[in-house]
Length: 260
Length: 233
Image 1 (cartoon, each protein chain N blue to C red):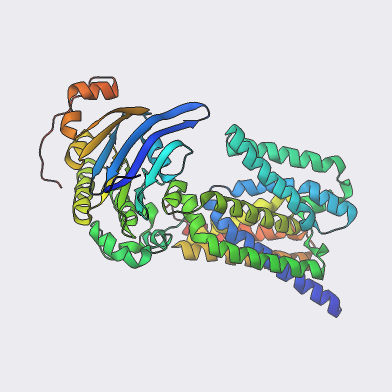
Image 2: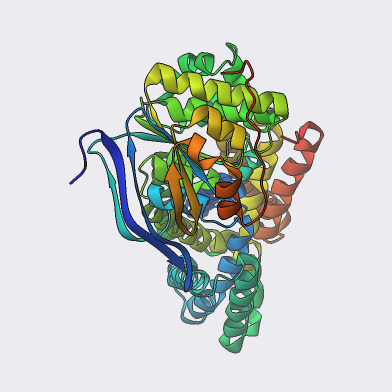
């Protein structure tokens, strides 16, 4: 292995670890809101963007982001207008995203779009991903108490003078960024796993909010590193290996699960 | 212009959602030291009124809080809190200044030292209500808003919670705005009653409101209330 490929591997590993950690940290808020599944349809909505990126050869996350933002705005607007349950809107958005993507996604690129291909990450893209992830973690950490309170009760948050709508918007934008980053590592099909599984594992063992949030982040980071190393060693796609590693961590915590 | 001792003034408050009028032309005021109960049948708009006062619902009309007034809110329930491993201390840490006051207010509501390490999801309904009240009491509020504090509490616990509210109000000289169905509580705790059925049906001291005729007017059916004294509060 030459120096450049060693550097490329380190960058891939680092960007995967940061994406896994940032997604899990943000996901620790989504679990409380029972919104982890929303990341799934948003992941699917990235598919048209991913299709464009694969066709024209630019960064998947960059192409995915506007489509996720569009998805967030569509869900927000539809919910306000129709008051349909989130599950209905989720199904609608999911189906539309997949359908549009497969209208013009080259079939030979379908696997990359669906399960990701972090090995395509260039050194520059990897460094940008790490920096964006650091930004996401800083913003989430800054908003965390307020977002937890909003998750628990918007009325209680309002009584404390918290600008609920502003924080909800920041929260949705953070989800959009994390989904756009995650799609590169695990693809459009598996993004929900990045935000859902590590917090679920951490909830089984965390005795308080601090242990839960940082436990989720640790599981996200370690699962990403293990998954990518397995990808290097065995040649299986990195995305499914990361998600499978995460699921193994969850299974390991099951005997310690508490009900309350 | 607010009157001197008013902590809250509400004028011609209307709340409509999706074309349905939930509250119409509600006007009242709340003075400091006053405990006002909002009474009314299910669907009368009691919780809607509290949520409008919090700014959680769009409304027309005027809601004027006295300048700089702090209020504490005790919600009916917090169903989502059990989804997260939130301890009592974590819950207090969500409020910017509350952690410093936590042990003092927990003792004030009758919870023992070391209680802060318990998970919110493990508390009994009585303990849960006390924690919510303690949380609301942090940062020296001038007014407390309660949405049916009795919900989910057994009979013994219910009396103790209201005894607690009565003591807290006396000691801290708070104003209280309280939604409840419990007529005994209305009699014991409140200085004034607002009868709500989408609009203000009547208003006055409990002794004038808790009569069979008035209650029939509020609830649209026969409701009897026999007041009896007991030691709590």
